[in-house]
Length: 477
Image 1 (cartoon, rainbow, N blue to C red):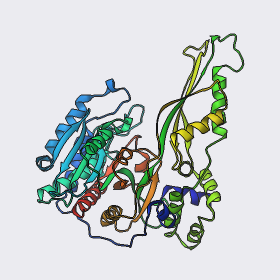
Image 2: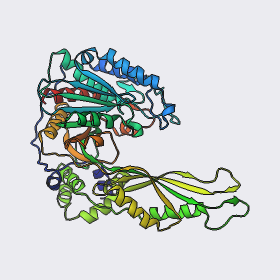
Image 3: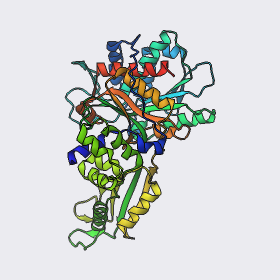
Image 4: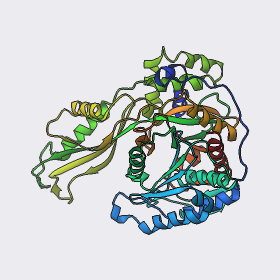
């Protein structure tokens, strides 16, 4: 049972309970024909490989950013996708965020397709290939950013380029918002939101990175599941700080700054945030349970009655299950004395916190203070944002995303879910109530594990299907 629930936590869908949350109505089973006209799988792989070779690495310190790489990337896009740049209007926002507009000729609210072209560093990782080689080998494009998130950017542009070349005009305006600093929680996406907001533009729907097409994440579901994020948890960074007069390490005192800090950390560790099944999470279990074999289906059909027990079991089942049902706290940095024989005058712990739906930055900070319960431990908020709103799943936009996914993954069960990570999409919730998070690639567990790690790669076939997804989406707006 524990293993069952752990796996269930990885998948997500919204049905009966989520109708109360997002107005969701179960979608009829429909498998549209794929739209791969004008797409060249090998050509797309070659273009992605070229862009992977440009090391657009984001760093926390802006002075360490190689701006020439970002400039080269933007220039290369104009050469690789000439039809797109002939027809679409392009703006550069801030330090390099890109905003394209594909005019439809009417005033219908637009669709926004998002991606980012900055990548995380490779320092300290044990790659089996050069991470910026863009090597195409054994049906895969290898390198940093192949999936996160240059793969999605290329899939979008492959679709747009093919449609522009065919003389297609979309039924509503299409904006492409490509961030240059997503990996460091930068301002690119916020600038795009501000730009659209100032122009009075409220998108019909927004689609960014997030879920993917995965297999084996839920017991009894024989085929792939396409998980589309409706919301994401909040992010909060906090520092715990203790101070002391210090002195020589040969004459230590009990209960010094590091000891008080350690006690505070242990209190947080021993008193985790409560495990709760948010209505959306409960609906996830209910919906994918419908695809499970008889005994499992019966269990998950009664998930509402088992809410407290399921929350407790999920919290113990796996890291992923725990993250799904509670606010999590990770100690990511510790600092003390800068010399081996000197007592610390200041000790610090950095906490990275992911806030569950239904909580806020303030409620999280308030609980941390109560748990630490020590006036000599300073709690300083570095940055934070509340969880995103839950987007609608009862509308044409969600139905279109589901159809587009099934057009290239006909065996997939489309399932909304909750992201435990953060994305640039959260900024667009200010101007749109239909913000979704989905990468249209079928990814193995090993490929998912390589995100932000060594040996990131994407199959040429998955990239091709992703371009087909976006082509279908644009054609049927």
